[in-house]
Length: 366
Image 1 (tube, rainbow, N blue to C red):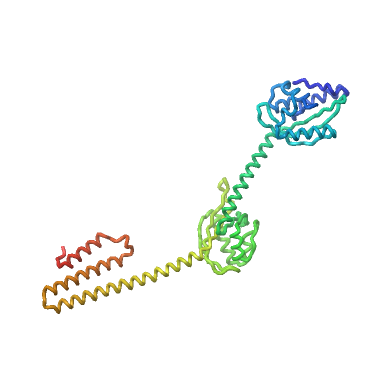
Image 2: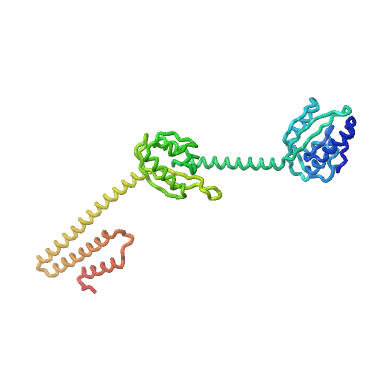
């Protein structure tokens, strides 16, 4: 144990000096006495705290040698106040420098006293390194979480979709501006975090539908449904509503989310497109029918003409023309009766075409 006799406390009774030195040496906090900027006494706790092996490495050294530059102004101000006012300074958080150059976070309490007209300063140093580093880490995580939340909020608020989340008791825990507006338009109610969602819906039938949809999500089901809804301050609209569950890091179900997308315009566009396609199909069928009839008329006329000519050569030519037109009619039929022109059975198509062509040239089928 280092030599820590209180040589400057001569006015005290010997028993008091003995007890003072006993507590000085065995204190769990670091203790030191300094004067005129130099350390005069220090206990083992402080020596170990600073990472030194012996008291000789500390005694006689400048106080500021062990104080981090970030805390030196605080220490100077404290010493000045105590020198002028003789006051006791309460706990102040400071940073010390250990022997290996690492930073040590401490909490320092100091008091000034005089002995033989010499002013001394006694400091009590509490090691808060672990606590402080935990606080800094917590602050770092909070800052990181805040940034993440701001980014997430930016994503949620940046979408036109209405988004809401509830806990397992249907209590609202989060929502975006789009959902707030949509909810007001549909139900005429202002929604706030902490509200029980079903209680805001007055219509019992609608309330039961909402509860059932959310309950499916709270049972772990992920699904999408479409609903046509008439709001209190909104015309009838078609919504695509997606539900999914929320789970914690242990995969425990803790809530559910709902994403609502207004698909009214899309649905109307689909209906309009469907109607247009149906009209075009009717028109194409009519065109195909007329083409077919026209080809039949031409074939019949050629056949009649061939019978009225006495010239066998002309009659033969007219009949050949009629057969070729019949081949064209067959090709046309194969094409327009195909449901998908990109997937025509070309083997069957070419076989029929070749047979027709052979007949059109007046040859027998082979």
